[in-house]
Length: 267
Image (cartoon, rainbow, N blue to C red; front, side, top):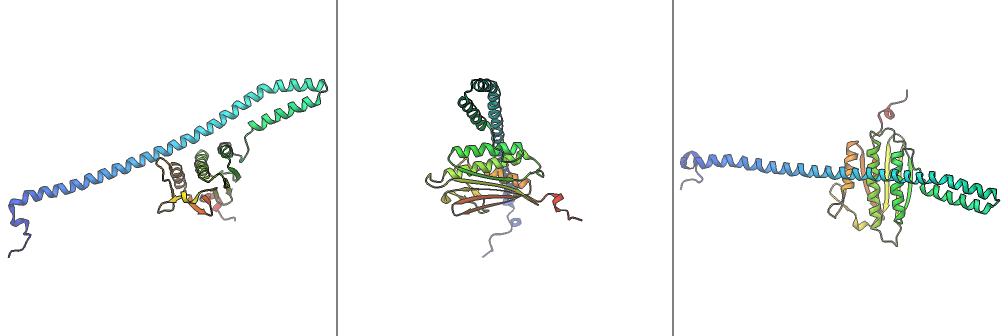
C-alpha cells in the first residue's frame, strides 16, 4: 500500500491548486491583520475623542464658574452704591436697626457670590469650588485638604481636568449609596518631595467592579470615560495610580514622580 499523502511533485496536476493555496493563505492572514489593526485604531481614536470630550466638559465647567462669579460681582458692584445710599440715610436718621439689617443683607449677598479658596491656583480652585458646591447641593459632605503649590506640574489645566474627572466619579459613587447612609468625599493634595493626589468617597461596594489589572470598570455603556482620562493623564506624567476599596470607601491615589530639583543631594 502506497503512502499517503504523496509528494506534490508526484501530483503535477494539483500543482496549480497548491500554488494558489500558498498565495491565498498569506492574503487571508494579511486581511485579518489589517482588519484587527483598523479595529484597534478605531477603538483608540474613539477613546481619545471621548477623553477630549471629557476635557472639553471640564473647560466648560470652569468657564461657567468664572461667568457666574463675574455676573454676581457685576450685580454687587451695581447695587453697592444703592446700599451705601440707604445705609447713609439710615445712619443720618439714627435708625441703627435698619442700618444693621442692610449690612447683614449685603454681607449675605457677598458670601453667596464668594468663591471658597481651597488653593492659590485660580484654575484648580475654580474646579474644586464648582464640584464641592455641586456635591454639597446633592447632600454630600465634602472635606478638602489642598496643601500643594503644584509648581512642578507641566500643565495646571490638565491637572484640573483630572481633578474634575476624579470628583465627578466620586460624586457618582456617593449617589449610589442609600440616602440613609453617610455620603462623603474627602480630597487631599500634598506635596513634599513628591506630589500626592487622593480622593476618597463612600460607595456601595457591590456596584464597584475591577478588571484584571485592578482598574475600576463600569457596567453601563458610555461610562468609564473619566477613569480612562485619569489613567491617560497619569501615564503621560509617569505617575503611579492606585485604587482601593475597603469598608464602604473607594479611594483613588495618584503619586507623581519627584521633580528633578528635589532629587538633588544637598551639598
